Amino acid sequence: PSLATTPGTAMVTVPKNGDAVLLPGSYNKVKAKKNAVLRLAGGRYDMNNFIIGHNATLIIEKPVVLTVTGHFHFMLGSTVVFADPSLTAADFVIYSSSVDKINVIGKNAEFAGHVYAPDGVIKVHSKLVSSRGVFMARKVVVGVNTHLTFEPAALAMTINSPADGSILNSDSVIVSGSTVNGALSEVLVNGVQADIIENAFTALVQLSAGINHLKITASDSAGRETTEVRTVIRSTN
Image (cartoon, rainbow, N blue to C red):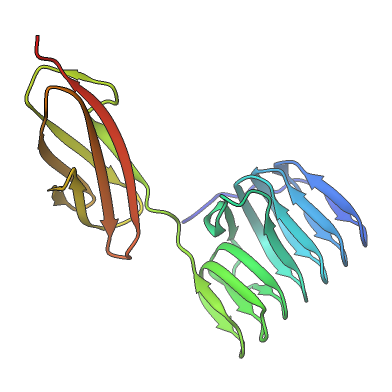
């Protein structure tokens, strides 16, 4: 990905042992000092540098996109926590547009997120407690005794037709849709194999009189799977 970043001028520091909520917006530098708690309310954040200090905690309250022109640094013993258990690593995205700068995830840290630094370096220190998500950069350096778990974004599917709740006069319906972040390997609609062209699919499904529930299950080459259900009504009048 490529994201344009427009940092602001505000300098935000959460003091040692402090606790603060940061609203989305543009900043110059954001730093949480030792043992501090910084809560990101959710949304888009643009800045030059982002630093989570020793044993500090970053809490992601809603999905966050954070862009930096300089570097980010998660220091020794820092932790990323999601306030809502339904949030995943894909809900915390960091994009670094810096060239050749080193972005660091420190020793004994617990990190979760999707990190992109296409022209920079991501350095994951040794003895990292755990790190999960996606890490993409010109160079990724991983220390010894470090546990990384690949946690990609969920497969996203769009159903083009039929519209949910449609009333149809036909004994069959064409179900069509696509995915935007995965190469489809199989799509089943009520057990019927769909035809796939790149990331788009179509399937002809027979309908019974009255209410029909269409279960659409798609999987991609990475092993991800997603399911949606559409309800249509076949009219017999």
